[in-house]
Amino acid sequence: MTRPPDLLARAAHCYEQTGDYAQAARCHDEAGHPLKAAELWEQAGDPVRAADHWVRGGRPRRAAECLLSARRFEAAAECFERGGDLLAAGWTLVTRTRSYATAEHLFAVAESRTDGERLRRRLGRQLATARAYGESEALLRTLTDVPERIGSLAPARERAEAETWAVTAADHIRRPDLAALVFAASYRAGVTGCADRWQHWAARALGDTTGVPAGPAPPAPPPGPD
Image (cartoon, rainbow, N blue to C red; front, side, top):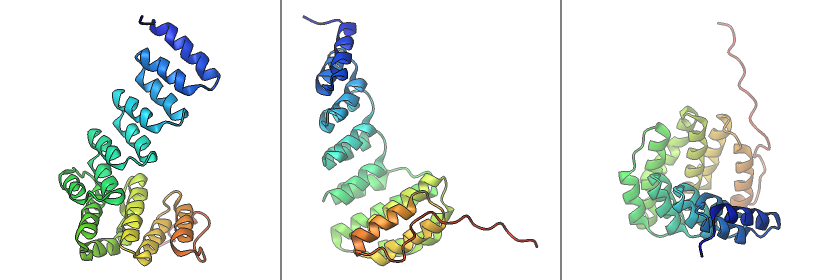
């Protein structure tokens, strides 16, 4: 017998109050509330079930994030693609899987409306070529240009994303020198959180954080009189 949605919602609330998030999620699922069920499956520590409900609720990007946390990289890329974020789909494949041809295709057809998106699209395509064929010359040229370009990207989110993609690409081709130059430029550009990311990267990649700033860059001085 089908239970009324209001009764299921009350039951879900009781389960949630006792910490039984999985049973609460099942109640909301039966009541036809996929988004609430998705939230509860996340709280229950089941990102795969959560992802299924995010998809059913029309939130494929949130589903992709859950699948990334579950290391279901191919499925995460499919969700990014379903949500229209072909750059994220391609990046997931080129950095987390060996589906380089599919990644390259996604980058090739992805629309890039801003300078930051165009830069990330180029980094993605060139990283796919480097990982598939060992041809990294074009990627090296792009990475060398990133420090000069990163400060001009807008909005601020574009600078942070370009930093992350460039550093990851440099890591994949074992060029920590280029990654450090990207971090330095990002730091000078005042990208939020750059110092912390630089510290963590240096500790992981270099085993040493000597010389890496421990806090945000000071504001640039005002221009002097003519």
